[in-house]
Image 1 (cartoon, rainbow, N blue to C red):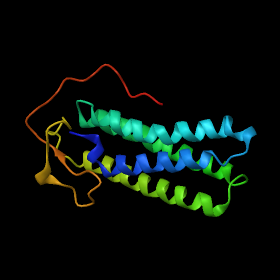
Image 2: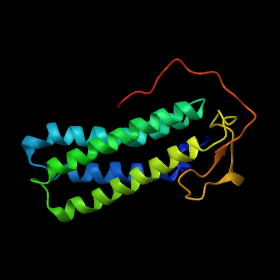
Image 3: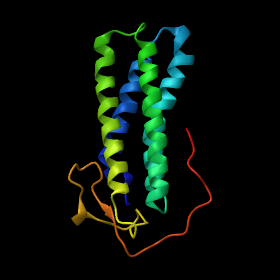
Image 4: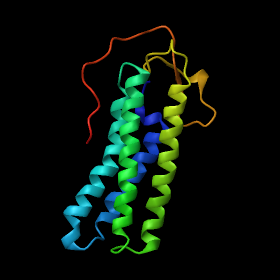
Length: 157
């Protein structure tokens, strides 16, 4: 895959984590520990699973990490619903929009990996000439290298 920092999905996940971290500070003290910690973990998990998935030796493994990132995005939606009683709609609007945009980018990235040829097992050998139309996944894997599977599976952060 190359550098995960080049993925628009990761860039938006990083923005989402930063927005979330900043909003958690506005929670009341009695919710800062429980809801705030869960909020941060879910937001960080999105970015960290994209980064870890991009380092995997196959597109199948990468897609698995993206599924976990999508699960964290769903969890984050629940957290935002719970935060409604503590934060104004105006404060929640930007983070909700960022979550929705990130979810679309992660879905598009997973779809672009699914649409890749079965010969493209490794996300490491990317060619910038093969950018996807939605630009969520700037490169597609190169068909010449196939890596053995890792025994380590995706981790939930």
